[in-house]
Amino acid sequence: MIVIRPAPVPTHLYTAKAAVIETVTPVDERTMDHLSQEVQELFEQQLKIDSLLALSKKLQTEFKEGLQLSPQCMLPSHNYTLPDGKEHGTYLGLEVGGSTLRVALVDLDGRTSSRQPLRIRRIVTSPIDNRVRDLRGLAFFDWIAGKIGEMLLADREAHDYMQLKEPLPMGVAWSFPIDQTSIRSGNIIGMGKGFYCSTYKGHDLGELITQACQRLNLNIRLDAIVNDSSAAVLSRAYIDPSTRLAVILGTGLNAAIRLPISSLHETKFGLREFPSAVVSHVLVNTELSMFGKRTFPTTRWDGHLNAHHMMPDYQPMEYLLSGGYMGEIVRLIVIEAIETAGLFDGRTPPALSAPYTLDTYTLAAIEADTYPSLSPSCKLFQEKYHLPLLPTPAEMHFIRQVILAVSRRSQGYFTAAVYALSSLLHEADDGQGGNLLYSSLDHISIGCDGSVINKYPAYMDNCQKLLDQLSRMDPEKRKRVVLESAGESAVLGAGVAVAMANASGSP
Image 1 (tube, rainbow, N blue to C red):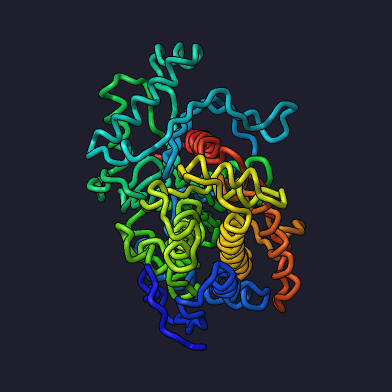
Image 2 (cartoon, rainbow, N blue to C red; image 1 turned 45 degrees about the vertical axis):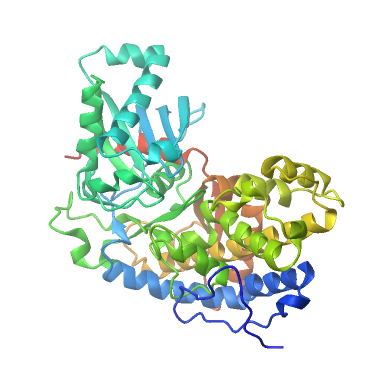
């Protein structure tokens, strides 16, 4: 029966050309089984291999447009080469992410070293919670400088280094859009993710961090700024020379790719001067999260999330598949099940009523639960959301099925995006230095970092299987795309970026 069913969330879709007519059960006849079936159909309708390949080709079109037109996406960095694996030294690496700040001392010993070529000597991690996101103006950057100071005081060698005349070289991996003006400077474009210091849009990031460190008398010199995804490319390429692409999938989503300079419109580079006439490629910060609006089908729950977001339509792909939003999509479906299908006897737990109260850790724990009764999940859900009674196995099976549908869609859409980027890499490579099509390398390595891609149950393995299937179905001749874990890549890559900047004498 085709009906118009009232729902507790808006039914409009925010993706152009993605409208879907839904076949649903009338509310008065509805059960959790009916809603579960609808969720499976809506979330899995585009996950067949031929559909994913078609989505990937649509994304390639979006990427090519971004290379020519967009001032916010496909941003060329000031990294024109990849590391040769011979860089050495000890550097300070700083990662500013959507949910975490990391400060580390990074040692580079060389790709052929008998020891670990690239390693973290000491690292301090601090959560970026709502209290930190709410910091206004310079207070956020002062907080960052304070965490740097705490780490340096905890490390004797670093503390001794700080007493010398020469400052400690530092690299910053910045997880937000930035318009770089040099390897060590760039103007903040925006931040999103609830950060109120976005009021410093247009200000030079290098100056903001340097001045914050100076206010605390920290003997540090900021020598390199890279995007977190670019840092992942550099850290992985330091070890594996087949790396040309890296993706970050945790709270947020991004990717960096090494492309010929000729593939980007000249206006992308502004008035910058290139380091030499022989430079042919550049590392590009894709801002992948901003793509997909015209490509990916969505559901009414996605529409609700987008409509109530503080920045609607700003990062459409991220809203559909990243760890920062998977839990909220599941929560919206659970709330609808409570209100229309009798879940929890129609009573919404107060602890689940507020947006973004269902996190990815909880999703992962429930998805990984293999007990037929799902008793560990029932206990976890009751304790976390203060339910008066333990959820029944049927209720928890429903919730787990919803989680599986959301995570499978995330994996499918993510794989389509990765395959589109690797195809763009093949197509754009024009034979200048590092040609992939005719090199001896039989594959392309993609560095992967982030809590979802590296820690969510079977996420990377499932994406690798989908990539292999896409490669077999694609009529174009492509090299195999191999996902490789690149843990702590942001701070490691920041260290590599500093070493490369110092070696090249970048201004």
